[in-house]
Length: 413
Ligand code: MN
Image (cartoon, rainbow, N blue to C red; front, side):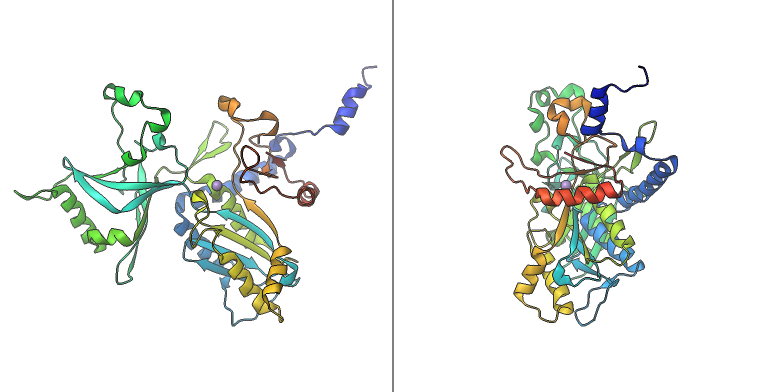
């Protein structure tokens, strides 16, 4: 009797989904190679903290792997690789396939902008001999998380004559960092009465940048003057040059492993570089495909995909038109639209992993679990699926079949 399976158990194994931690389905070698692969991701996060830095890094790496700048006067054939740089804040990588472009392309898109504090156009002021920079937060931040955290400053300053200066201060050993101050505990009774969302207000996210006065017996704003003097000596800029700058403050902390078992990675910008990095690596490693592959690393997702470098712009369609114009003799608007209609795309972004400390925020049966593999969302949206996309069941079936065939650990949420 003992050897015989309970018929209910037997039927369950046949009919029920069997979710399992990926580590329980992998060999020691596979686990070791996954950890090793993540070392590349960790240095990608450490070395690139803004959309501009990721765009430059991706272009350079792609060039070292045989990609070249798209050139409409050239002829391309299967296996050729090109890049399109979108105003230095987004990049498209394409690997030409053996099938005609009119059959559509396979697209993976991820965003490379992350929440941060942007320096305002008139940022620098002095108050009681403390110099500060005013910021405008970018994307969905939890404002209370930003005070007391060491920050680094990244971006560009473009002078009126077009000269472009690249700024990166605070990530390398010996460089100064920046900070938003907090109030010491025995003075913060009024702060304690504020609502959680108001503990730190947007207008209080000002960055401490100096406290030494320019040595003079008279005059006001001497600390601010001393800061401008330093900036002028280092970059040759004056206060007006902030008007044509894009300077971003981001957490300066280095990426580290989390946990005794090092199973997690702690760092700034996982959303959405955790998708952008694998998409980039896949593009670089792509052997000559049958359908042309297109990898889009885009900007401005955090604020609604707006602007010239966000997905609401037409740069992706423009790149498709360029590709089709050069490989399809009878180019027309209709050819382009047919090709776009035939495209398949994965829109890649993060999903929340179930956290037992905040269990009530999740629906346990449909939440993503740590270690259970890549997460696919058939649909997103809130309330009545508002703002959702909702992939077709037919498409989900094709995707699932591919993942199952190649034994990829995946889940849905
Ligand atoms: Mn995201």
